[in-house]
Amino acid sequence: MLSTKQIKYLKSLANTLESKYKIGKNEISHNTIVLLDNALKKNELIKVSLNNTVSEDKNEIASSLSEQLHCEVVQIVGNVITLFRKNLKDGKIHLPN
Image (cartoon, rainbow, N blue to C red; front, top):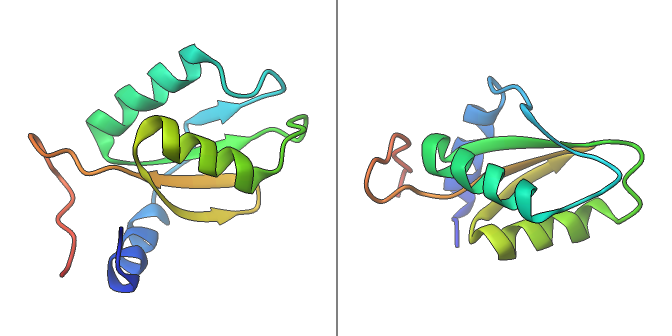
């Protein structure tokens, strides 16, 4: 669980990121989970865009991604979900206490 201070720090880092990953009308597939899992291993902090064709609620999608990827939802702004998972081996992001 992230503290308020840590969430604010991650939000500030996320401002400079582009959303490289998209979820479309087929929603969350196994391949999507594998792709996002690899992205989280490498980058720790990623943005995922939801197309307008997605029928499920974005909060439900964020919750589902969080459960399946074992990560934290940092924020949801519009159709963009920001996810964070600490890489214990190769951590690049050092969270404040």
